[in-house]
Image 1: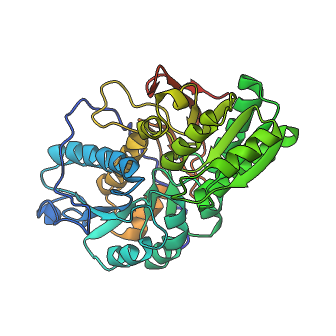
Image 2: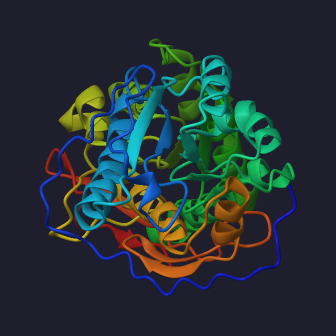
Length: 379
C-alpha cells in the first residue's frame, strides 16, 4: 500500500467547459451499469469501468452532494465525448453523509470489480469511518470536500483530497473575525461531528485571547435558547459555528431573535443558499460563510460548492487512464505524484494526500441572498 516513487507529471489543465450538464446514467441508491464496452480498444484496461461517488445525495446535506455529482458528471461527459473507445461511467452511493451508513456502502464499493476509483467520501465523519476499508482494498480515492485534519494522519496512502483541511480554514476564519471584522470576543459553537469539532477546534486555538466561550449543540436540535443565553452572558461580539447549514441557520435565527447584534460566521458546511432559507433573510443578513473553494468560472457547466473540486478529482482519474494506468495501484501512483492546474486551482499532493496549496474564501449574505459569485479571499 506504499506509494511508488514512479513519477507521473501530468501537465494537463483541467479547463472549464460551457457544455450543458447532463446525467451519465447514475442513480442515488447503489449505482448504474457501465456506460460502454470499449475496454478492449482503449489505452487502459480500465476502459468501460466505473468511478464511484460516496456521500450525501439526500437528507440535510444532500444539496452539497448533488453539487459534487454534478461536477463529476460534467467531467465524464466531456471525457466520453472525446473517447468513444474508452467510456467511463459513474456509480453513486447515497450515505446521507452518515458515518453509520457509509461503511456498508463502502463494502459494496470494494466488492464491485467494475469500480476502479472513488470520488469521496464527501464528508469527514464517513471518511474516518471508511478510510481503512478502502485502504486495505487498495482502492484509490480523492475527496472533493472532507476537511478533517486527522483523516490524512491515519496512514491511508490511497486517500487524497483536493481541498484545504480544517487547519487552513479554521486559522483563516479566526484571522478574518479578529482582523477584518475586528471582533474581540468570539463565542465558538459546534455540533459534535468530526468535521465540526475539527474546524471549531482550530478556530478556538487560533483566536487566542479573543476566544470568549464555547458550547455544543446537537444535530437536529431546534431549541437554541440555552446557547443564545451563554453567548449573551459572554458579551460576545462575534459567533463562529462549526457545522452544517440547517443548524447554522437555526442558530443564526435564534441569536438574532435573542438580540445578538454581532457577526455570525460559519464554515463550508454551511456555505449553501439553504442557510439563508433556514435562517430567514433578516437573520442571515451579514453572515459570513467561509470555504476552501472559490466560485466556478462563469461558463462552467455545473453549479454549487465543491462542483469544481469534484470535476477536478474526476479528471485526475481520467488522466490516469490516458496515461495508461491499468490497475488500482498504478492509478494510485499517478494520483500521488500528480501535478496540474484544475478549475479549482493548482493541484499537487503531499506525502499524506493533502493538497499543498489552498485559498480560503469568505462568502457574505447580502440583501437577503448568499453571494456565491464574489467572495473575499482571506489573506
